[in-house]
Length: 423
Image (tube, rainbow, N blue to C red; front, side, top):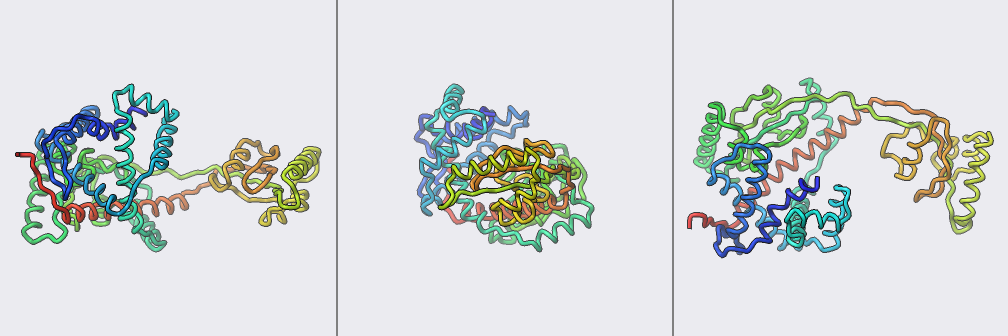
């Protein structure tokens, strides 16, 4: 896992660590992209594609794709700097610690593993800072503007149901032939002709993944155009209907959108099973310290109540008499059926460790001290709520993808970019 995470950014880190060459391969507004950056990034992506057993495009096509990616990143970092977006050392360290924990390592151990694998940790830190910076500027410019209404969720669920498609997911390949935002009829004609030429090559047997790497203008081009698994609601609105008509392995005709022309391939299709969750029926007694009752006194009282319950007194009667939870105290401490994630972590952990009928030892949370009793457990079909949540997430993801594509294209179109590859 560490090697994988390091690899995501390693090609960027190694570029920073390399001895720079003085040849400029692109001018990006007032900034430049150096040949050293391009060579290092291209080498790392080539290595990644080989590990994935992907068919490589020509060296010229790959170099152009990699350079375009570097240009887009450069533009985002420039915008972030102009906008005052900066990742400070504290934020950077917290994110690095999170990455280390995900790999079950301390930050020092994580650093040692990276350096053992040949990566410059200082350069890695700074490129990781750049990645966080780009994420933050994207959040400001794209994510924060995306809204999902309940009406949109209702519409998606109704539409999916009408196609008997609510449980279906698609693994998609994608190729984008972009056109300028204010495209002339000639621009559109050229884009369509290019898309039709790509489609003809694909239907004649060309490998989709390598063609995407070489030809696609989409953000996932260097991943072979792989969009991953998408629910119906995550599909861009302009080709969601087309996807439903295709079978595994089939390729669509070019689909026109504001971004250009899209070609999609169904790599696989799968359906969801019922979404069952384990629910716990529980009740509790809550005591809280305050200005009149010390924490020590509360601890004594909660232990006394525990002993009385163990000796046979009724939990509900004691809860009505003593619990300071205004919501459940008068109901004998009853919390009803509890869904995972609903309670604070300390409470939920203790509750999950109890057998039915068992009473916990006093548990401390930010609300005070609890006694918990589990009265029943069940598996509940949560498919409807689950689908609604997934629908909301799907719509948000789809809108974000669409907005990001448009925003990056606009950022590129409004900037001065000059290539120097042939010089």
